[in-house]
Length: 441
Ligand code: HSE
Image (cartoon, rainbow, N blue to C red):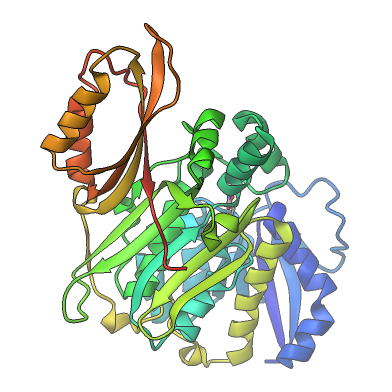
């Protein structure tokens, strides 16, 4: 099979990038593959408009169904995004014996566990490098480069839109809504940007990473998820003065004994990271994934997490991996989820109440005697030890911010204390809780 015929579903930002790379880099890729990748067909509901591409000789379809069932397509690239109709098109393509490459993290997080067995049944491959970390080849690193390690933790800045927003808010004091609009114009944001800013996109990606890292089945619905939409410029400034940055992190760690993974903690939330930590240096739409393994120690993968060209680059890496082993031969590819299917386990997610963190708590309180004493006595009752208490302003009779830095405790314990603290008459309900991570690198 010296020519691989590619069908592309979706000609939006990423689809345009993939069509462009297939055209512009064809010769380079052929020299690396010893085979030719030919863009044979493209489907999009809206084929109007000039995307700056010469698609002459490419079959243009307004219905993706025509591509996933076509006899003259070997490999389908799904770039529609979202759960449906992407899931149906991918399933149909597999049932018609086509290999599939997708950048769709929502699809893999939610439906991967039904699509992987379907692909095995039909002897085809599924590639999804572009689904996590945009252009960073982090899944390949985890699946292949770190294959001999027991993974000890995975941390990631996994959403370019949120990182872009937080960076601009910190560096330029920019307005949240304005920066979100800019991220959308640059093609970073999801079709529904609440998936970005509410942490859902990061949770999709974290659930895939955790499953690959720990040999467990994907449990996206169990990821604890908080977004960045309630972070204000004042909060960013307050943590900066304390030597921290706020990053939206996805965090996954295994728990168990004697090398057995008995449960996995998975959480996504705005996180305080020390300004000198490497992950704190990751700015704009860049992503970073930090994986620690028992032999390799700390590793970190960095690059553009979103956008047309970086994501197209990751899509094509998968296409080339699959093309290399054709015809037949998909059994020579590394298992998509990094463990052979029979060895993947159904591992429980550690309840968030049992997860241990350090905390930054910002309260708004009436500036009157005894408030800090009342708050700290509740924390002491819950056996939560404090590293620092700061009152930032003096404004008798008005509300002022109080910042508490708490040593490690469980989320359940912290929430029990917060429920009592917010019942105090002098404490406003406007509370910001940020979890803190220190990092080994
Ligand atoms: N909306 C995603 C982001 C695109 O901002 O990172 C890449 O998955």
